[in-house]
Amino acid sequence: MVRTTPRGPIEALSREVFERGVRYCLPSAELARSGSVDPPNASLTVTQRDDGSIDLTWLGGAYRLRQPGRPLTEAELKLLGSIGRVISSRHRVLVDSVVAAERLDLLRGLPEDRYVSAYLDPAPYTHGDASAYDRITEAIEVLRISSSSTYENSRINTGVLLFGKMPDPCHVEPIVPPGSLMYSQELTMSRTFYRLSDGMRTVALVDGSGRMVELVDIAEWGVPYADMPLPAPCAERFEAHCRATLCGGHVCLVLTPNGEIKAFADGMQVFNFLDGRWRLSDVGEKYAQWEQAISNPALADRLFRTALNLAERRRGGLFVVLADPVDADHLVAPADRLANGSGESPEQGSKTQFHYLLRGKSVLDLTPTVLESVARIDGAIVLDSASNLLGFGAILHDRLAVADRDRLAAEGGRTTAAMVASHYGHVLKVSEDGLVAFYSGGRLIWDL
Image (cartoon, rainbow, N blue to C red):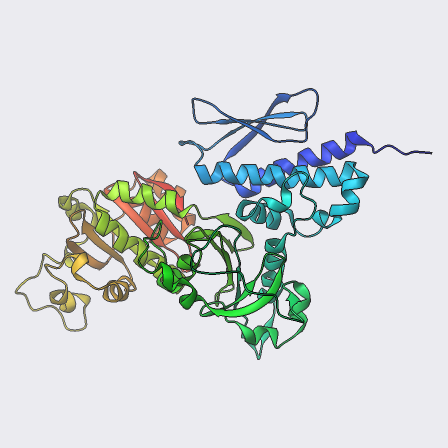
């Protein structure tokens, strides 16, 4: 007797997994069921509307997806496609016994890891390609296990460079040495494995079949691309990782000393796993918004890089770029303004006695390391759009209405200050948990 697969419950489950996947990957977006489509098709269709929203159909369900206040970015649309590929592949495993026999592995692990993997390399989720091995998901699993382990009472950090499938004039895929091991979770059972690469300077090189074939210096790997511009600024400690992925389709995954997993591709950070969830970085789009707002490319670059460096070191900071320098009178206390007090004898022990060091300076006159040091002082760095430094370690006035003050009370002092200051210009806020946020016009534009 032949048994048929109960399609109804499986389709309902698949639709629920799809909806959860979209809400997980795009937490700020609004997804609403708008109807049904017949016959059900286990393939995601995406239709862009003139108002910036998206119409989706998946397995008999019709949906409307929108990002409040803006259209979806190119990276977000690509991530939607990745979700669709993963869910479609898993659905075929559930309803087709032939596919199940070949690709039962697709049901293992966390679906969100596979969304990231399909974004970075869609081949394992391409219909009909049963031989494609999902080495990215396996590598993520290695880093996940490593993140919950310690070695000699210290947090583990490690990394892997997955050799790409596109032409690379500077590197050839290495020959597989005898006895080479698959880069999979079995490696984490060996304590020696954690000594082989630290992720920051050295990484394991994995070939197209998923085997660990070599150990490489990540900076040396990126040397051939040293003169190529990066798509967007990055933190200093990860510039080599970005350069290593500029050509060839290589993907780099790093478990950082902070316990964060970062994924690099196409010369930039693409994802990070922080506070228990994956985040789409979309660095190129976010930097473009910041640069356009500042209208001073050199200043935008300097502040963005400094903010990322502070975030990596888990140091907080606040950068306020005023649209009009006169607004400093409304936002910054007189004692914190560098223009005030020239020629006076400030009180010993006060912050103002050091104002002479930075009075009349442009932020672009300061080296990145000096700017970063100054940014670590409690309070905000305040400057105008021409890069002139107006104050540092500044305590900002709270001129919000009572209702607004109550609304922000639970957000924390730095967030409240960022929201207040953003009424006068553009603000980058760096949190000690590693996030960078851009505020303008009294609202959050993005976080990274």
